[in-house]
Length: 230
Length: 248
Image (cartoon, rainbow over all chains, first blue to last red; front, side, top):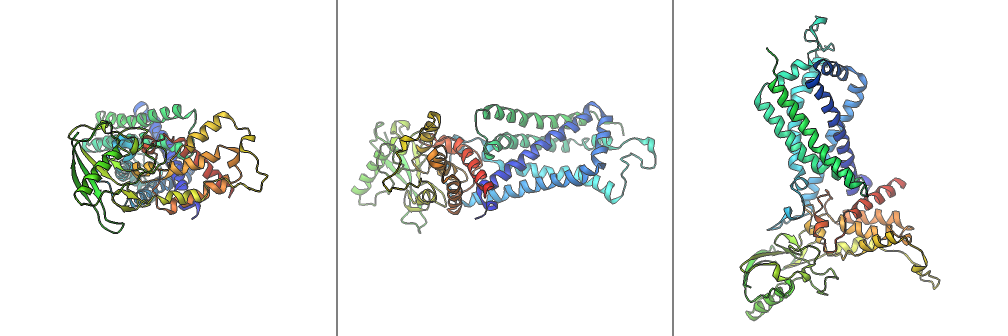
């Protein structure tokens, strides 16, 4: 049995891809917060991220690979783990020895994955279509008018007009927080890091797991409440 | 104390098995759980019924033979005890107690509550030892100085009795705490260094072959372990495994 199929190697790979995604979430939130504090800066950064070849053709594919790898491996491990107990207990008191978050990563993960579908539909597919199908790399509201300004902030605000969409986003971020609550801290254990610094690192991971989704929730609600005139 | 026992009965490894309810009376709070099972079996014997088969040996909490999933938890609701050290005073008069075998694909039921835990033996045989040349020139183990902290840590790991509660508690039926304890007890000592790489690679390979699930760090194993084996062992095994894999 090679290292690829070994349980520890898979666990290590899950942890590394998870840590990469955790780092990405921090970066994503930082840019999103600009929409609250400085729409101009948000527009400039969005244009940079959307047109920089390094971001578009190196970092973006790495991110897509990281996301796909994380959930495909998650499914593979879930199936393998379910097969490891063919006959289930008549009475199983999971709450006596492990948190709900740790026992239900597949549920929180599936909600986040479903959200990702909605999120990509809302923003990513639109951007890819405008940039690489229509060929408009200007990022302007009116591509023929250089004075029309960047379209990113305006489009983002309009996306959060629907209370249903905001509700779905908020619900997904709550599940994201639950997923990170177990996932982030436990990734250190998976990579073999458990020593005198673990308590402090775990505390940092728990705080981060709450702050990041709360930040996203704040932005979604803020933009919903501060709609631009049509 | 009057109780209602819901016990898993299964004729053999091939048969389907089912839960059977047995009312039981006259149970004293100072009886151990296994003594209560003895009382049940005496009653069944008297009625001409087949007694319930369950594993037990030392009944002192040190051999790792007794098992049982009691009310959804391995070795019952108490912490840091084996089933033989679980006392009936933990329960209340009139309680219903659900008693099942440890469930895992790698621990097939032999009969009733007895499961085959030889998968653990095979993991041990894959590397859970130190090769010593017994030519007559063997160096006394105590002649090698060992840091007190390391010696203590190795001893805590070696306290694992291989009962399988970690597997039974884990939602994934993972055997990582057991394997990690066995890897750790040697990884921490100079005597274990010579075979360190092959040991961890072979033991993890055997663990995977046996069909145990993957660890997802829920920590249930550590909570339910009657010997308090720490999750640190799993982190250490992960480090040992990754380092050994990198070496090739």
